[in-house]
Image: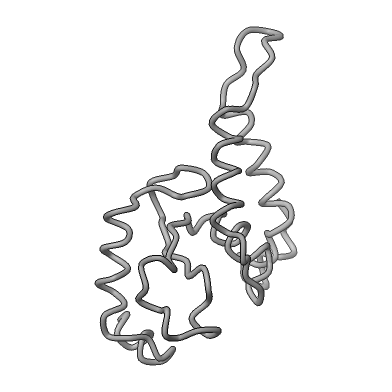
Length: 138
């Protein structure tokens, strides 16, 4: 299946092996630390500079659920983030070192993730659902 898609987009025949090797060497999302649903993002996009398609220094691991869209494309699939490495690193540092204020016991990290999920789902729901589902707002 991927070979057809790779040929359709003009990808190198070596892309799949480079992608798999990159995920093996970098098994977490550079922005949020997730370990599932990972994508390999080109820092300089393939359509801008095809010669850097297989360059390991031009790749970053981002989770496909949210971070690829937010950090890699700045919430617009037609765009890209020239500072994706810096932005994702800063976010991961802020996320892992965020302060918590104890009010009614120690707050769970699930609460802050729930806020992130709500904001992300609210602003991106039309892009990830079919036409029939768009009318059923979450």
